Image 1 (tube, rainbow, N blue to C red):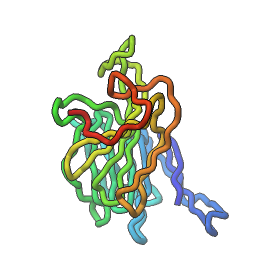
Image 2: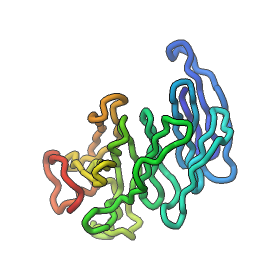
Image 3: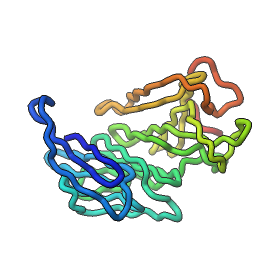
Length: 232
């Protein structure tokens, strides 16, 4: 199955004959709140869709009928804005940069750890604004691509409306409860990332040139640096 759609509608396509044919399996709408993100979850013969809409994640069948939902506190956590699924694990980030992970291998999703804000362990300052996240196959790591807000003149500012991509890939270790980062290189930014479906250690990342980006240091390294804790 392949999911398509927009902020108001989801269409599920069924692949036939090893991808040689495609047919529309179902189409449904969400009128009450925009659809921020959606993913198809497959566990054996059970198939469902997780939909981030408003201040909740709805779990529906492929026809869009809601079976259950996970509610978010808008004031404390924000609304879910990004989703990803890998095997038994679902991850979400919110408009207030809170990360939540669930094990969805059972009939009811089970939280893996506590909600985690995307902030420094040592200073409690924001590490950026999450624009994409992916979870590995055993739910122990979550990779993040983020933006930073810059004030006029290039100074880092959490209140600026100018958002620039960060040249670092962040990884949240759910077991150690800490963030690591990897700088992908001078004047380069990560554009896409994905964990292997079986080997939880393998992360692939697409990198492209980008003149305006934020590195997290005063000087951009000319070559990628080793992964390090973020920041101490």
